[in-house]
Image 1 (spheres, rainbow, N blue to C red):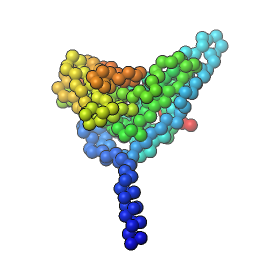
Image 2: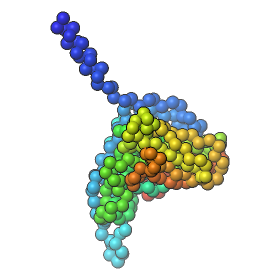
Image 3: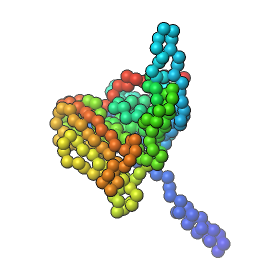
Image 4: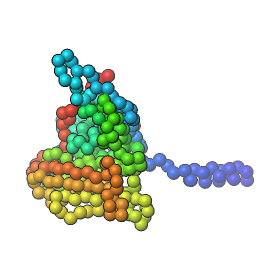
Amino acid sequence: MRLDRAFAVALVLALAVPAPAQTPKDPKSPVPGFPDGRGPSGPVTLKIVSPKPDEVIAIPPAAAGQNAAPGAPVEVKVALSGYETFQDPATKLGQYVALMLDNYPTVFAYYDVTKPWLFKKIPKGTHTLRAFPMRPWGESIKDDAAFAAVTFSVGEKDGKNVNEAGAPYLTVVAPRGKVKNENGKVLLDFLVTGCPVAEKAAVPDSCRVRYKIDTEKEVTLAKEESVWLEGIAPGKHAWVVGITKDEKVVPGAFTLAQGQFELEATGNPNAPPAAPQGKATGQ
């Protein structure tokens, strides 16, 4: 009887502790011409190891006869687990960690996370760096632990590009730059961190995501999931995306984003852009 009671208690405790969330395995690539995803091997976690929070990176002294340097090189290191990065030799695409600096329009593709990434020159002032893993066709991993952000400064702190304490992050991953597709479908991909995206009736302190493409009608989403936009005509387009509560944009430095893209008629959509300002370098 005593053994049965101990077993029952252990069973209750085991059932009371939720199992860690498992990121679903990736399907075949939904976009022709892209490598298939290799899928997470378990819960995906990502941490920014360098730069450190609130770190002030010194600007190197100017060479003789030159003006003071307007910025400084910044080395980025991350720790990624549960997800493999790779670059397919044929297509030059694959799984990578995306780096986004402030609200700069380019998302940088960081394939080899065993080596540091180097931003050759980041301007003087305060900056926020965001990092998150990506699938080959340009869709982000949406595990909460897979998103990382750090605020640091170059030369001195100026109070810019700083998220308010407790404010959520909206990160619009795609579409950006030139997008090539044969069927007019365009991936709208975003991440929301720090506020659950759900119906208010189901989760009282939740957020919604509202987006608008060109002059089309605004659309409100109550789930954090990618959207395939259809019927997009070739040419230039603009988007606005925001996190809302009670139909108002949530205050914060990274809760409202806008950008543009150009849809071309053929080719691979949403390929990660070239990274002219940084590269992975050896130790």
